[in-house]
Image 1 (cartoon, one colour):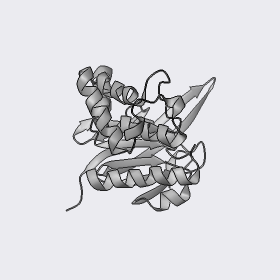
Image 2 (image 1 turned 180 degrees about the vertical axis):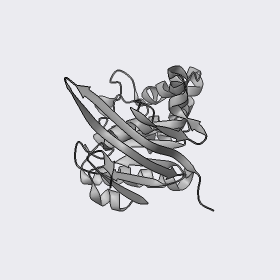
Image 3 (image 1 turned 30 degrees about the horizontal axis):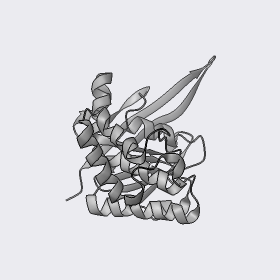
Image 4 (image 1 turned 90 degrees about the vertical axis):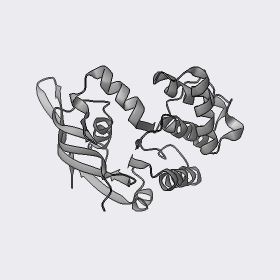
Length: 225
């Protein structure tokens, strides 16, 4: 039996109005991602990759089209409900880690759980578990400035996992890392996929990484082709 779709985009279009002209960044994209898949999205800068990722995660609203997460059309939800849904079901990893410099690793991860209204003590417990899972047992109380780039990306990955998401969306997760460190992050993603059957959609310029995913799609001029 085929795996159910975790997320499905139908006719997804995103346009922006700039002065007196309309720019179409995403043009009638259809995409379905089965549970447990590791999907890579590749293409030149400006192809629409990051815009697609933001729409799949409900960070932006499409001009046309829908995104379905199971039986839920996420853009039929009021803004507040969509934010709650996103915190519960989606994990995000970005190229520039976006860690808060004044907080330790465990506090950065716990904040994502507290946004979901998890009590502080429980949030810290979950954060510590996720940091141990990504191999940062000795770095729990280090602030981002005391961590290497690879360690910061592991913290970002732990933060994406802390609420038990069904889907992780990663935008160039190895883009700022050297080859060896990028490989370590990729191996960690692979292990999490295998152990948890966690679904990953990853935007990347790294074609070697993309070839090792379950499926790769290319984008050009806002379309999948």
